[in-house]
Image (cartoon, rainbow over all chains, first blue to last red; front, side, top):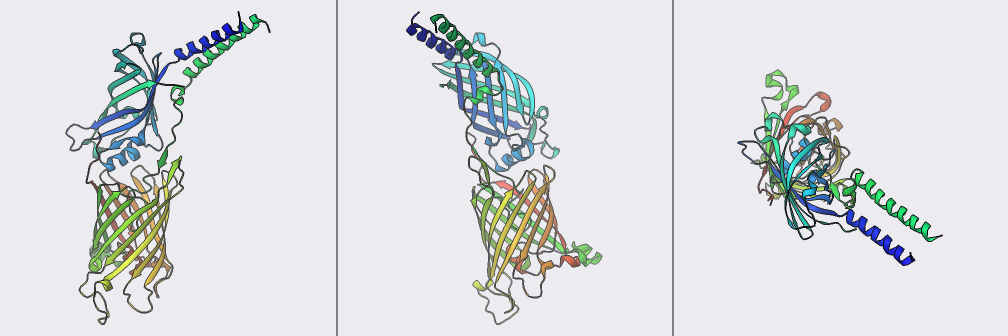
Length: 186
Length: 304
């Protein structure tokens, strides 16, 4: 074996590990939630458009949501959300760590629409719970679009709603996520 | 080194490479760490529950496109005793409308029953306390206001012509405030009040005061607040126990903020509580009062 072939072997080695570690990411995933109680006179909704998410071709997923980034229609709601309900200075981030369960059925290198299921640990307001929810993945070229929707019980995450506002703020929040991931180049 | 050894070394190197990769994937938070820590600046908010401590302006601003409707009540002196139901028989009030214009600019108007006084102010935040990439240890806020005495005969001395400008007074304050923790906020307010007409020649037209306002939040929705102004060149005949001191309780109910307090000051604007004669704390000349604040959103933010 010559020195040259050794180096090409090494090069192939490193290349294969790079392919092995293919990852997709975004910094502007959109998260919306709605915690409006039935018959509430005002809607309790918010949106945040600058959330980070990473997905590997093995199906590992991680996501971080900065609580302070949520924008509400009403400034006072936003203030109460941060101050009283989410305590965003104490718990600045919500994070998710999990995986796509049926990754064998998802071909990230092949255009198409895939029904997948994602499960893992979600931490909100300092409380970690396991969640499990379907996700729609659309692969087009090297881009992956992900869409999912699920609900959480606010009490599960120790978010207490006082009786005084119980007619406006519901006991559950429906959460929607939209993300368009692109390959992470190192 | 023989070729064989070199090959072995290369294989080991590859194996090491993949194993570190594996280790990385298993490590907590490793995936997001690859995106690198994004540098952000975190503005410090809610040092006080409202843009006023009790009487004085606080370091906080109203959000843009909101209006704060404020009703302020001051009852009579508790030392009046049972005949006046410890002051509750008498009340003066101020009604005010404050507007958030930009995130650093607000303005407001109000009218007090005492002296039928109108007042208006502009408040601008020059520096905003923040943490993170841009670290700012305190907020710096400027307030300037004007008041107009609306009484038919505003002056005891009949020789003073009752003109528009003679009815006016001005105040300027700089607020230097810091939210030290979620619970504790403290601010200093050097304040100056200028009155175009004063009661006598011995009384200076300009009064200077140093205010100290603070908050200690003891539950999510309740806080102890205090508001004191040390008047540097006091009106002759008044001593420091006439300096305005208010101690109160902020209660936030969701839509409203109630500020319940005891104070020796009757006035509800800077001109009034700094230049009017306040009760003497030492003699129990204090009154109960409350501020009620209700914030309305004038224009909703689009969530699209």
